[in-house]
Every structure is written in structure tokens, then in C-alpha cells.
Amino acid sequence: MRKQTTWPGRAERCRFTAFPLINAKGGQLHHKSFSKHSNRFSTSSSTDRYDFSDLPQELVTKIGASLSYRSLKTASLVCKSWCEALRPAREAMKYMTWGKQFKHGRGGFQPNLDNALQMFLKAADYGSTMAMVDAGLIYWEKGQTDEAFRLYQKAAELGDRNAQCNLGISHLQVEPPNPKEAIKWLYLASFEGHVRAQYQLALCLHHGRGADRNMKEAARWYLRAAEGGYVRAMYNISLCYKFGEGLVQSHRRARKWMKCAADHGHSKAQYEHGLAFFSEGQLLKALLYLELATRAGERAANHIKDVIIQQISVTSCDHVMGFVNNWRALPSSA
Image 1 (cartoon, rainbow, N blue to C red):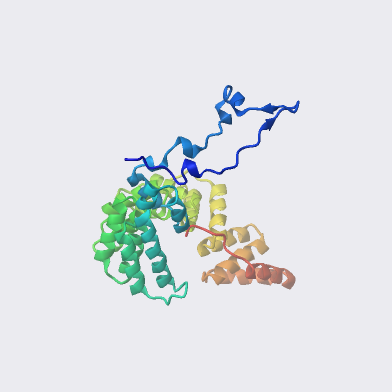
Image 2 (image 1 turned 135 degrees about the horizontal axis):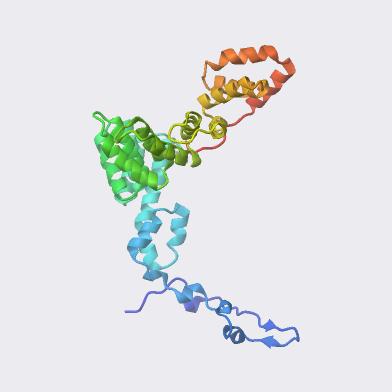
């Protein structure tokens, strides 16, 4: 049987050849003269040296699971075996796209959770772990927790870190909860870099749910999640540094993470950061963060904010309010 080659084959190469190289004296230099000294000047292409069709289909399928629909279509053009191996992933992505359009009412679709669920289930039948997670979310919202658990479990066992995180959190939320099983799955997702799982794992270790209370380990995971952009973890790690819980006490680092959480839109952090400025006599900065906290629903900020307004000029107050009106929280992981 003829060995399968990549597309396009050698016979389909570009018919144009390279221009001859010219030396300083005007004479031609041949490609062969370079190959004697260094293989860096080899004119053969990488596709001539390696046949992508030799890759196992299981590996190609695994690679395809992490690609976007456009990338999937591009990868499918590499060779015939890739096209066949990625067919299920392409079908899954098609149904996933329709499911999201039904769920969020995009692309001319009316919002319809039932239709979205059917699309996600079809994609899950093609092996999409993302679809299993999305279908599980809808089942959870509908109160069909057994179906949600089944899909989360299947995707989690296939290595999907979103499913591992959701499965862990679900074990904490059901009655009766199963904290030990939750910890197991949260650890798996956390080691894969899932910031929400890292935060939830830190909470479990902080409060002794599913494992012995361990503030040092909890602080470590709060810090990992905070560095990954999880806002609530930024606030919690600030408190760890402030009170020296699980970490060496550092008011400088506590202040840094409190500001970080405040700038990412955490209302309690905005309130506490504003209080810190107020205690230092920096009234305009204090007013800025206290006003942000007030607008986010922190009623305790109102009284101190009113005290500041009475101590500053109308012009200064208007300047701060104008800044607040145009303020936008920094993007975050949650």
C-alpha cells in the first residue's frame, strides 16, 4: 500500500526556484558549497523531512480538543489522516457554537436553554469535554444535579480542569456535602493552574473543610490564585499579609494586594483601601476609593465619605467625582 504523504505532495511544489547567490566579485555561488560547512543552509523544507501523517490519531485528537474552530479547520488541511482524526472535534465545535448562541441569544438565535442543552449534549457525544461542562452547568441550574454530576465526572476524568473545578465545588454545595471528594478534585484543577479552583481549595484549607486546617497551605493557594488574577484571592491574601496568617506579616504587601483588589473592582477592598488613605490624611485618594465602594453597595463608606466632603473644596470634590464617573475596573479572572 502506498504510504500516505502530507498535502500538498512534493509534485505540487512551487515551480519557481531560488535565485542564484552572487558573490562580491559577481560570480555565482552554488547552494552545495554551503551544505559542506553548515546544515543551516539546507534548502529542503520541514515537510519533506517529516511526515505529519505518522502522528498517532489519539494524539492528533487530543491536540484538536484545545483548538478553536478556525484552527481546527486549518489543522484538518495538514494531511488526510489529520482530517479524519479531527472530524469529531469539528462536529463537536459546530454544535458547541450553536449551543452558545442559543444560551446567550447571539447570532440571530433567541435565548433558549433547552435548545442550548441539546446542542451541548450533541457536542458531548462527539467527546467534547467543554460541552460536557456547559451541559452540566445547565443541568445544575435546572436542579438536575445527578445529571450535572455525571457530566462533570466524565469530563473531569478525561482531564478537563474546568470540570474538575466544578465537580469539586459541586461536592461542597450538595446535601450532604462531600468535602474530601471536593478537595481531591480541587487539588487536581489547582495544580493545572485553574485560579478559581485554587481559591476554593484555599478556602477549604483555611476553614478545615475536607482536610485539617492549614493556614500556611491556604495562603500559598490564595497567593497563586491572586497572581493568576482572581480578585477575591487578592483580597484574602492581603488580609493574610496584614495579620500574618500563613505568611510572614508584611504591611507593605498587604497594602499592595488590597490596592490590587480595589483596582479590580472588589468593593470591600475599595472601602478598606479608602480607610487607609483617610487615616494617613490623603483625603482625595480616600474619597475616590470610598465613593467607588459606596457605588458598589458598601454602605459603611458613606459616613466617612461625607466627613471628607465637608473638609475639601467643591472643586476638588467635583474633580474626584469626575474621575469616579469615568473609572473602569481592571480586567480579572473573576
